[in-house]
Image (cartoon, rainbow, N blue to C red; front, top):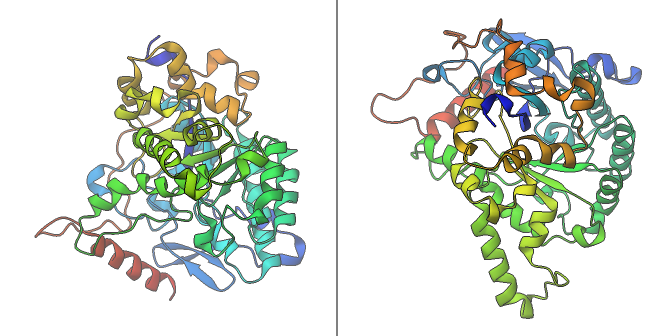
Amino acid sequence: MNREDMILVSVDDHVIEPPNAFAPHMPARFKGREPKIERIGERDVWVFEGKKWGYMGLNAVVGRPKTEYGMEPLSYDHMRRGTWDIKARVEDMDANGVLGSICFPTFPGFAGQKFQAHPDRDVALAAIQAYNDWHLHDWANAAPGRFIPLCLVPMWDIPAAVAEVKRLSAQGVHTISFSDNPAQLGYPSIHDDYWDPLWKVCADNQVVISCHIGTGNHAEHASDLSPIDAWITSMPISIANSAADWIWAPMWKKYPDLKMALSEGGIGWIPYLLERADFTHRHHNAWTGSNFEGQMPSDIFRKHIITCFIEDRFGLANLKDVGEDMVAWECDYPHSDCTWPDSAELLWEDLKHLSKDTIDKVTHLNVMREFSYDPFSVLGRENCTVGALKARAKHVKTEPMLGLGGAVPQVRKDGPVTSGDINKMFAAAAAESAL
């Protein structure tokens, strides 16, 4: 096997919703109330129900030289077209050798937090359904075989959430975006039976619960003076607290076919988490009362929880302790951790020592199985390899694009960029957008 033979499916990418995403799909009684883009100076701002949000291109820095990375592009003009245009996205995937992709939302929040918090529940539900219809029909289905569609659900209304899963799973949607810790958003804990109807409908329809980092628990900034590098370093591992909570949650006993994914969390930390979880159970279950019915916490994790990595040599060297049957790769396009356009080259260096069977598992077979994704039947396997995709993308320009513009931060002359610097940038942009 060589690099060109790999088949790459990414379980964590992002889409910048285009300006016209919502209007065609909003029901007639809410026409005019859908989220829309307004231009304020050089900034494109999302407007919804009287509120405005700038920084709409959350880390959409793909294609820029790293010296021009900033927290945000300010408008669509400041972004590579593949961030929001479906034709250009597929071309960028081809150029990167990537066959398939799961794309999390941007403006709504990775789990739809802006809609979840909206006080008018009727218009919030309409916005969620409009987003889902856009994502399925205008994004995923516009490029057959290339995307694993993902939907949002109204967390405040479980019957409506169940109905939405049924509606969309009947159309081929097999994953929902959900908070890694809904209690942090003011909803019941995952240990509460409030969620049982949602878990059941997901299990019954082979729908994976995809939990992206930052949708509940957040990586904390150590201090305003801390280099932003420290926060970026610990951000993926911040999902470990949620991972432990999910291991001990009750839904696995009730719905043994249910699966979830920890999105953008990496895998290198997992062996110790599982070792510690098993230690905790052996040493403490006599007084805590936890009961895994003859299994260990690590068994629950490896059976039910999908994990993913971008670059993770330690994790790949310890797949035995991670569980290679539930590991997947991610690209994270168009965020600043993204390895585009060199994903295949970098990934091959990290996993070329593994067997072909293991490489196939972590690059695409695990994803195809768990997310009910079958691109080969649409495209033909021979057209899905890194080599085949790159061969048809020779016209795509992948050189760094200089001077795209936007909120490129000025690096402090007396030291590194700090968490405080970035927080000030966010505050200033939010104030400007609200004008």
